[in-house]
Length: 350
Image 1 (cartoon, rainbow, N blue to C red):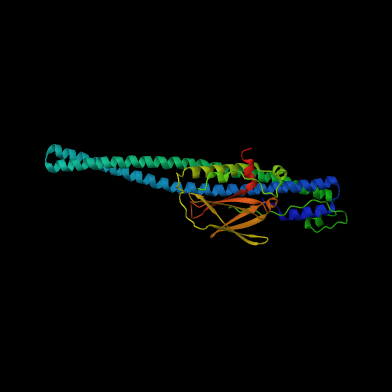
Image 2: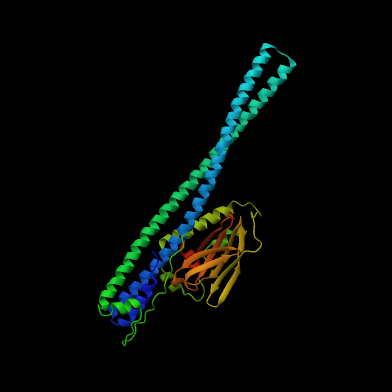
């Protein structure tokens, strides 16, 4: 599923052999399709994180629903017992009225009324949990469909890349296939001025106001023309839009100066870069949501946030780009890390 590392070596070898415009265009097409494949892998990783989160939420509500149904069953049993006690008290008081039987009757009626209320409250609780469970199950089904769709797109793109590689091997000629595949072919002809894409590893399976989430201007070094020409994976766009809406809804539920739960005083991102180790502090948004923006390096990366580690694949085209990191720490047993390129935000409302 991942872009094969030998593909880059092969492309480098082919570029050393080919000097013709048509062949150079083939090499350029392969490079572009490899980049598209890497972005599809990134989208699949995002969807797998969503799927894991949805599965955990459903499992949690499976447990809540089971406990609520057990509690309802116990309340109904208690109600039936209270009903029998009330009928007995009514019979005894009718047969031989006295102050004692009257007190017993009053007590039995009170117990029956309380048991009825207990059943009603537990019925409502089961209904609320069931409703939430159904919503979470629908979200889980949607995540599963998104993962399946991503896998299909990825398989098709992988097949296309392999087809291009095979075609270029044919054009290279039988005498040079082995050398090209080894990536050690040297040519005396002028080299084609096309940069071979770096390899991409296999993906792991894995208050501040809402205004802070709005699209921001691209860094000065990236011109508007470059940003406009950048290809944005449709699934990545859909993913970022969904994440922005999720965060907006979550923060909108906070009232006034209430910022919700704030578990960490310091939440630090640590990652390795070409120049050494980078550390950066997260900003608290509200309700255990934390955010920062930092440049990333291409390839397989490990991001350490306090004691947690998250592995992600960054397309080499995004080398040095600024990424948005959002940590959802509501579930401390396994917080959820959301990551996407900052430049995608400028495409959300187009």
